[in-house]
Length: 297
Image (tube, rainbow, N blue to C red):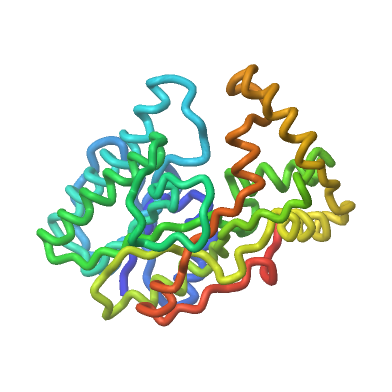
């Protein structure tokens, strides 16, 4: 079985492609450099002469906050226009299955418990909106071309050298600058990156669907930071009382985006945000790894 993996040089590509090859899948890579197909997905892509059984579309822009309109536009150019460009290049030889890596950010929730796939999409950031647009486009394109579409909405993704918020937490713990707030009891959904390889094999023979992707444990900030501290041989991070953090947040509200904390950020790290994975476990017979058991840097 032949797989085209986009975003091959990214975090998912580095961790998932070797495992797909171990599963005896023939993987062709797509990226901006050092790949079988070298393209900038934001530009026109030459039609593929070979047919792929599965397209694993992980290429995209994430892990940054736009500072101006040009940076905002880049999310749409890469995540939405790039997806359309990819599909245009695939129309010469249509795949049987298409896996799209979306995000739980499409729900637009900063807090909540056990959020499932039926919740309305109210994402408001350029990242979330661009992924929502790509999801909508792919739904129509795959239906028109009889391609089975699997939209995966991962939560926080863990693995060796992770990007984004988890990478920031690791760096802060390493430098001794990380503190939990109010005991770090808020829970977050998290997912082990290597499990994407298992999901890829489990879609074969299935008809498609939209799936949240996370493990069963939903660890707390304290559990995550303690695990990181243990691996780094550091002391467990101290905890700041809530009333102290709230006072700092009010000052941050006055200072604007440059402040390390404000009221919204405080709520994000003191209120839980978890997602339901019951659908993917049931329909794909998939049992996710426990991230805290596998966690490594």
